[in-house]
Length: 275
Image (cartoon, rainbow, N blue to C red):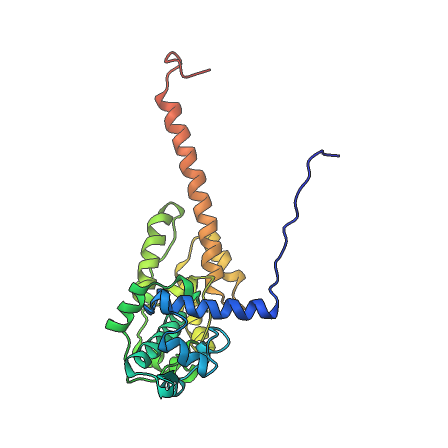
């Protein structure tokens, strides 16, 4: 038996009270780091006081579920009287809520608001945020039926942009050209295994299109077998991942072999490199 000992990792589970505190601290930190609320005044700032008065001082539990109407309503105590939150502070709150949903929609999943920077928020406010529009929760930013309809009407994907792949030694160039074509048609998410599907109907329609492109163009025998294996699911991310793994490994082995062969042919028995 070995004389070494190990320390088991411990999973820390926060109590409900600790979880609530962490969520409150998360929102306060974001207000400071992203929205520019002065750190020294974070607990007495009108934005904080208004959120606290309305019971919305927790990020995940309260704030992220707010609507534009909720943000128009906050009041805070000023000079001993309860007054509406000033318009400029309401605009900051509204923009911050929209920013959180916008970032989640871009990443197709929840975000860690503590990773956001003031520069990102400022850029969003200056170039992308429209305060006259409703704030759409990220999961509903694209409705199913409308998303599929818009794609069918507005996007004209071209299968001819994907070229046939027949020779294994052309893999590196083919992979690069394929990804360029995919990105040009806004379909790169179809080969991203981490992609979170929001619109199931749209995703299935796009998968069918790309799967057919795979079937028509991945003609080298190994790639062809990968495509056929996934004919039922048409999981394009898995097809591409397995195809890349197969040919990346093959190319690596081939390059290593070429390097060894090159070294052997360039070395002489009397140059001191043979031992």
